[in-house]
Image 1 (cartoon, rainbow, N blue to C red):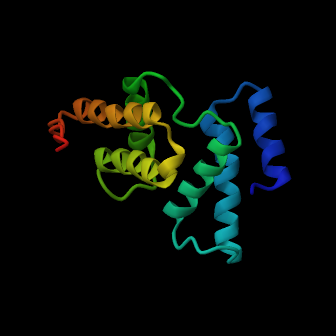
Image 2 (cartoon, rainbow, N blue to C red; image 1 turned 135 degrees about the vertical axis):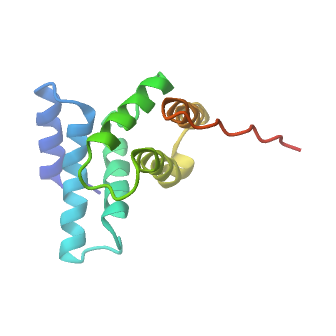
Image 3 (spheres, helix red, strand yellow; image 1 turned 90 degrees about the vertical axis):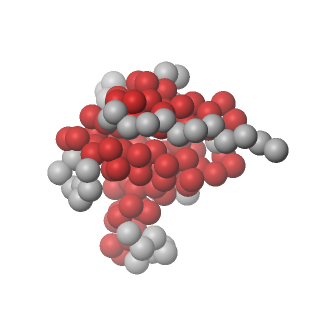
Length: 139
């Protein structure tokens, strides 16, 4: 459960008209602080970010809430290319963010949300000039 102060800061960000990613940043900041204090078993910053995004989504912050998969992909591309913390190429970083979010959300994602995010993966591949994944046949 997110701390009261974190929820209060996220709500203040929303009332000031800030982006959902800024609001979610409050939850991520809280989780990273928990890692530093040894409060839970997240072993890396990557896990702390995923946990923070999950808490933000459960608290009503519109993380990955755009309805257009291409808009989600463009946002991830911009974020990955502007990041100073990434160690790999931007495509891999962006795809990792999206995949980690999908995996972390698990069954909490509705079928339509999961499909939208899977389509965003294909859009991301298009933006980077990579081949799309072949559709798996269900037998």
